[in-house]
Length: 289
Image (cartoon, rainbow, N blue to C red; front, side, top):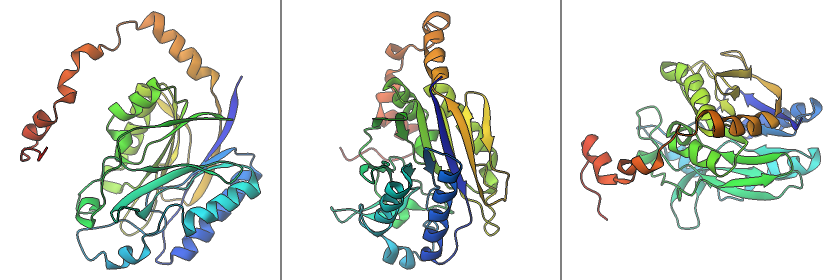
């Protein structure tokens, strides 16, 4: 068996970014004590997320990547000898634009890659487009590491199921997914964790924030196909470590070769490439391209 120990943390964001960083680093230490080889944090865990209101405080907290927060995680990853997916922060890009950015840090402390959210939202409770957060490049990379082939899907990138499917086709065995979903869509955390695992044939490790106001229940955990492998109880700060067997990924994909040889028919999916059709059905103006 190719067993890997993965961890996910779930906690409430305070108004003090420094306090949030200290809390996250303590969870890294706890994960290492429990023999985790990788840990994932939530979306916007350090600063809260943009809204349709006044975001001036968040603008001041935007950082470069690499920068102060990622450097702290890099130092901790090297100290503990673990992989860290440092949730997401608001990045001030080298092009002057803002991005919702995560990454993958190796046990040597190297930032293997920074990953920008490809599908920013504009909901009243999470208004990334209103804030000025730009979409990432839409490349959906995966990374061959000592613990398996890893991909990072930020929040809605997991929900656009074409994304985890592409990562699965690229060989991803573990998808780490920072999320920030509130109580009104809490059931969807489970639904998309299951769906993301099913379409990618990979394990999905979700980290979702929890809070009392606004209410975010949590639901962080590790998914394999139709269910949780392990999870953190709702409205509970904490960490869970799960042992996953990557041989199951290989077996699942071998099984699909014989049992589901016609499961997918990519040649019939041409409409997915028609951006204007998507815009029409959503009532949006034609693109400027």
